[in-house]
Length: 319
Picture 1: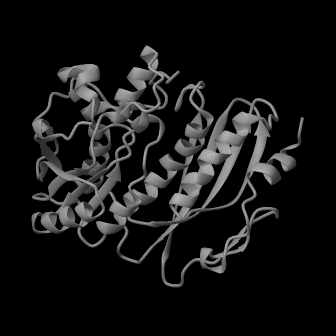
Picture 2 (picture 1 turned 60 degrees about the vertical axis):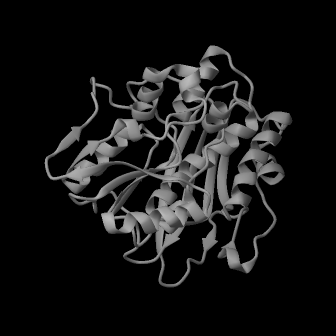
């Protein structure tokens, strides 16, 4: 049995970052000291992942570590921010320093490395398994992508493909454990679209990440911007293998209402769409037009059927 300080030292104290990381004082003191880039705005977000609610308790530990960071970084992507630092608070049922914790740390650190995100502090305590991750990034003044800038006439578009998160969860609940299945990859190892968010700065008028479901998250943009939307459901780019796994009807429902996709939903003035499409294509990512924004409030083109996407206090868990 090890103390929380020993676990932090063993698993969550990375090598001191170089001066380019902007970390004056990192893990090991009461606070970390950071040096943001002069003239940039600090973007900060926090997410908590709870076992049995946000991820299956039996999921691979490395996937849990990856996923806990990815869902927070997705918020930075939606703002067009560059990831810089993160804090992680880990609650464990026991002070286990065996293979599970080593794999968890490996998954977490691998995504830190892939996204140039420095782990600069956190906490380890005992309780039901949950992970809280605070991410910090930077974005130039006046270039942050928000939910409130969409205008009537804008093109509504989405990066990547939809429904993979919900499809992967459905397969997991059916007993599928082939971790190479494309839908399980989408669910267990989502990729925050940081490069896409950066590329869309100066082009998109509004953006949000698709975490609670396309229609639910679109609703947030419409409410903040005071506009409505006309969708073209047949244009929705659905994740690889989704129709084969769920059938056409349920695949479309997953694309519209399913959460955990972590793609970017963006509004673009029509004259900017081709440029945005080209920038994302250079980064190996699709950008698909799925509708238009209109003056009249509400969402048209799809049957809503009372579905609202992910709701933390009314939706069942994942395990």
